[in-house]
Length: 103
Image 1 (tube, helix red, strand yellow):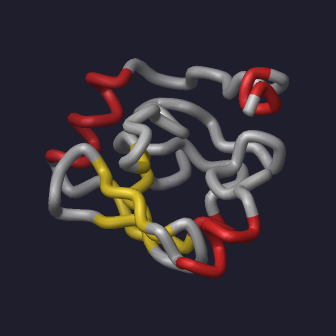
Image 2 (cartoon, helix red, strand yellow; image 1 turned 180 degrees about the horizontal axis):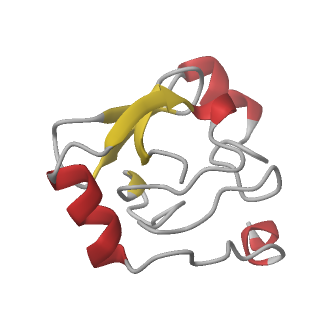
């Protein structure tokens, strides 16, 4: 559990700016494996426990990628995470998440 605090993602834009990009259609949905080197547009929040894995505006690295270090039983059971808005749903394994386009 404490491994989550070993690598803190770099904040590239404010959460507000990331939301504005999504609001104006300047985002795309990609697979979680393709998120490395991209900036997340919305919160990835598994429930339970309801603790964000990724916040809007954070640069995703291999170490901070959602699903890195996820327990094997969660992957087998395909537990889902929901974004802060119901328009995009992210599964821990090979599903999509909205992220801003590369600049």
